[in-house]
Amino acid sequence: MPEQTIHLRPFETEDIKELHRWSNDPVSLLMVGRVPQTYEQTAQHVEKKRKNGDILLAIENEQNRLVGWIFLKDIEHEHGRAGIGILLAPEARGQGYGKPAMEQMIDLGFYQLRLNKIYLTTRGTNEHAIALYKKIGFVVEGQLRNHAYVNGQYYDTYFMGLLKSEWRQSLT
Ligand SMILES: CC(C)(COP(=O)(O)OP(=O)(O)OC[C@H]1O[C@@H](n2cnc3c(N)ncnc32)[C@H](O)[C@@H]1OP(=O)(O)O)[C@@H](O)C(=O)NCCC(=O)NCCS
Image: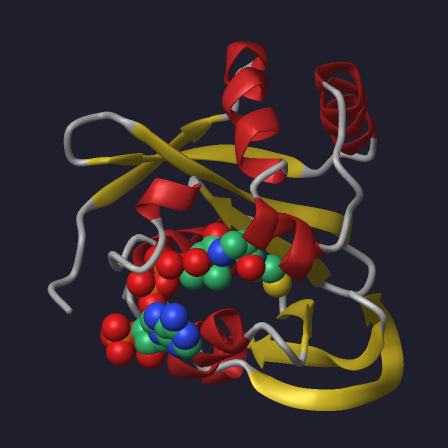
């Protein structure tokens, strides 16, 4: 797949409307695991993340069209670590936006925030996301058994991590 050009900008309050649409998409509900949310609930979720000091960025493609959001959450400077999360618009998935967006956010985490480790959790059923994370260099550090209940079945959740020492020296 050709590498897409994307850029990250601050996630604005007016972007919540789109986030609300993406979050209620059937695949998102299955993979991220929330029940359908009202606009108000989505807005409260964003507010909670802002209060937590999470870094919320919008992903725009070459035509400056909003195609998703990406965030660093639970930033703990004492330990040099943060979690990462990404959600693309349903129509923007499978086109190569995820990888450059993750790479730019990881660069920001390692080279601006001086983090030492970036981690995430993902459901074992989310083969698409797992393929992307492995391609970037995340390794499975733990498997949480029967951790997610989806459509009447329990699935394992994977804890994946990436260390700064393992990351490409892109900015040097
Ligand atoms: C998961 C997500 C971020 C991936 O981003 P994306 O831009 O769609 O992914 P890409 O197109 O860059 O594909 C990445 C890799 O996944 C693999 N892949 C692509 N489509 C796939 C599919 N349908 N099933 C399994 N693997 C797939 C390929 O290996 C691909 O790399 P390649 O094309 O270079 O071989 C995005 O699809 C998304 O937002 N999904 C819904 C929300 C979600 O699941 N978030 C993550 C929660 S942990």
